Image (cartoon, rainbow, N blue to C red; front, side):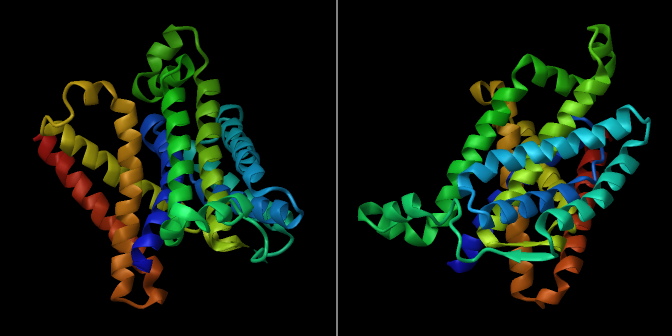
Length: 308
């Protein structure tokens, strides 16, 4: 039971990060390695704010805005300084390592006794009385379901706005954006801001779930995000090819895609948890790399069959 609960908790936390990666990887076609720095950025900002007495709920929008700023910096390096997309992300990822250390003051900052969005007076009051008592073991999962649903709905709504359509067009058909008199560079910067805002928000939630900041928490985050996106979008394409997404579901394509990405994250974390159950925890990074390789190979094979 504990393994299932832990998998769902972290699956949804990394799912929010995967939504950010989905914007850069699938929509913008931008290999953004800023993720490995912006994820712990959320954790460092959260840790320092909570230890200073800032309400845990307030750290969520603050972290999103700080992450958006990091994304803007990556975008400016790429668009204004004409640095290649991959190198722009590497530069920001490297810079954020120092920024995170400066914010937190040290490489590890615990806040075990402080209130979090998962453990506070309001939440505890509900789960300690009446119907909530039976759901107490699932407290963090249920809070994460609520937060993830709100984030997903906001992202779905944004992608259906005029700005969201332009963002999607930049990746699909940049010439259309230019023909409309829009600046592709500004739209890319906006997309990177939203993406890294979501990644930093995920780092914020991760820190509150773990109750500490660790400088290395972002190592391999982009791999987890990419694997979740690939699994989720592959799942969506499989359902689409079978005709199960016809009618009203097909008209909700954006919502179904983001839901698939979240599902992909939970599936990926479940695979990692299952693998670690039979292996040494020291092998975590190796297992992550091997699983990601398998996901990539399977994805490429399906693409090859589709185009054959």
